[in-house]
Image (cartoon, rainbow over all chains, first blue to last red; front, side):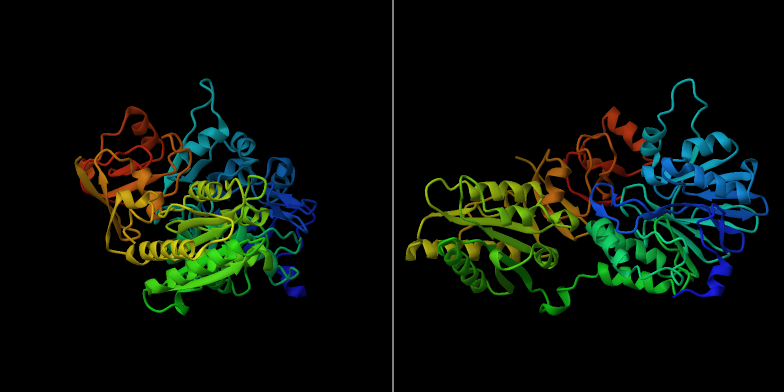
Length: 442
Length: 94
């Protein structure tokens, strides 16, 4: 939706002028519409923006975040339209990644009076970024945490410690008098639209969710902690470092983060019930029969919801969503030319976008003559920091009845570890290592 | 071998470990929320707060002290990749 009033209150940003978003608050960022890939991993169908902001108080000016080095010219041009360098008393860095600090060294040269404000976790990064030499002017900065404030005279910046969104150093800055949250990458997205404001831009809902899925999702636990600080604020406007400025119903974006960060399966499971997902590939049905027997064994344990999927029949992405909500993951693959089947690796290489902390992993498979796949999958599961409590199960060619009983015991052992490893129980260190089914006494 | 209990209060899980075990060896496998970076005491990412049993961890090395200072650690913060467990303690992400 585009309205003439929205343009008047903060017009298009394609003329290298600053754009006012609240009384004494201006956007002085840069547009990068030609960008098609961000940080090697994100597709950006219409580019992105690097949002920087300027806040004017009675006693001075604050600049909040900067832009990518290549676009520093636009940033300085916009800044010079609304402030002099000798007025800048405060530079806040909500996040030190180079797309937000590229113009920082030059800004520090032009505004020598300015004091840097960074989070407590940002010090080492700041030094690594600026690489001060012995003969340089000493690098001075102030570290801040939740509740710390800096006054600009009639304008108060209050800091929120929100680490790991999505680097250790990240923080948010709250402009008390105007109800503006400078949120860093939180609530951001890669969507470049010169109209700047969410009620004036094109539909960017996909970009918002896509950004969350790739940048914030691995840190959901920290998103939840940050929301505890953000949700009580009387927010009038959210000013993130990428994408549209959220002035129209900003709280719905906070609500969306809450929805995206809330476990989806937990409410569908019975109280205390745990979830195991078994994925398999099978060329001649042997690994499939193992998978079914493992499911039967796991279900015998009770208190566990088991799901079984043939990887051949589905796309990777929905399976990643399932794994995010599961407590344990078992992967079955035959061995083909000394390796697991490719869909197994496709799935395992797609799990970096979710938090795997505390999940159990297991591997199994039938093989013809070499059988390396199971060990290789286990190694990868450990590499992803899953706990692999039950040693992998390999069966040569077609499973016999006795071997299928081994599979059921494997399922019981895995399920038993999962069900008995609940909160409040003291876990023995040895249990965190792999054990054979015999050692587990199953 | 002497044993010690370490509790990760963010996930309410306690593990009984051999004395001398590093926190990093336990926390990831049990699923605690401490996040690791370099894993060698340099980046400060894995800073944790020791809620109880501060004296039941090995003394920080000179290098760890330096990293803690650089990261503005508060009094009972340690690096989980460096600290070894000697007695019962309770920790959480810093």
